Length: 191
Image 1 (cartoon, rainbow, N blue to C red):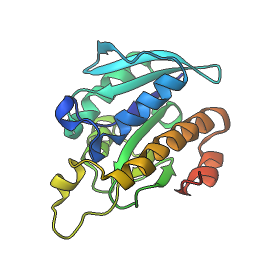
Image 2: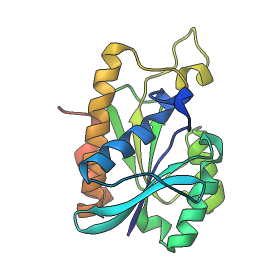
Image 3: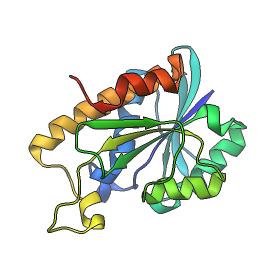
């Protein structure tokens, strides 16, 4: 069983913002595999289904970004999964250009408060993650206003492609493992 967590903030106010690319990618995965992410449980919206014959639970924490770890901890405890082998977290990364993905099997939070919360609540940095580039912070903006902003028209098209490729990378992680997925998907999306 795999737990796939897309990070974001609930409510329409944050819909389609840079910080919600995890939620957007969960929506693509759910659509591709006909999984309804509507059940309210574990401080999250979740849906159960199968990808490549393996059971998956898709999660959108409703705790707001900075407390994502609370929801992830509840899900991990309930399903009794091995975090290192069975958890995949999708997040935004402002150190990556739009259209760039970075997959890792472990590592620091890199300044991302959602990942920081998950690492704190789980007590480990060893879990698979898919980071989606949202672009660096412009000089005339602070970090918070940047991550809570929406993409301009040109970037929106590219980031939508990123969601599709990120969803493919997660299928690859499930089928082939993180190492093969990293070698295939790290870097600019090639569409």
